[in-house]
Length: 142
Image 1 (tube, rainbow, N blue to C red):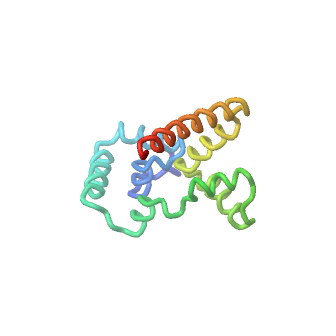
Image 2: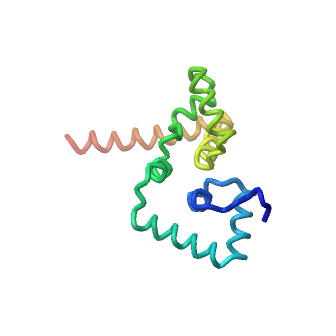
Image 3: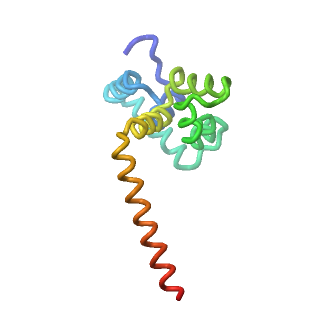
C-alpha cells in the first residue's frame, strides 16, 4: 500500500457506503486482506453503525443530503438548470464522483437513448393497461 493512501475511519465509512472509486476500493480490500488490526477496525466501524451512529457526517451520508434528486439529474442531462445548479451537479458527479448519483445518471442516460419506436410501444402498453383498468372500474360502478 502506498504511503499516500492511509486508511482511517472516514475511509472505512466511505468503503462501507460504496462511495470509493474502483482503485480506492481495491486498495482498501487488499489492505483488509493483509491486516488483522484493520479488519478489527472495520468490524468496530460496522458495530458503531449498527448501534446507530449519530454524527453529523454519518447522518449526511446516510440520508444523501448533498445528492441531487433524480429529477434534478434529469434536468441536468437536459441542461435546463440554472448555471449554479448545473455547476454543482457537475462537481458532485465528476469531482466527488458520488457512486449513487453516477448510477442514477447512467440509468437516466440509458432511458434517454431508447429508440423512439420502443418508447412509443411502451407508452401504448401503459395506456392500454390503464384504459382497460379504468374501463373495469367504470363497469363495476354501474
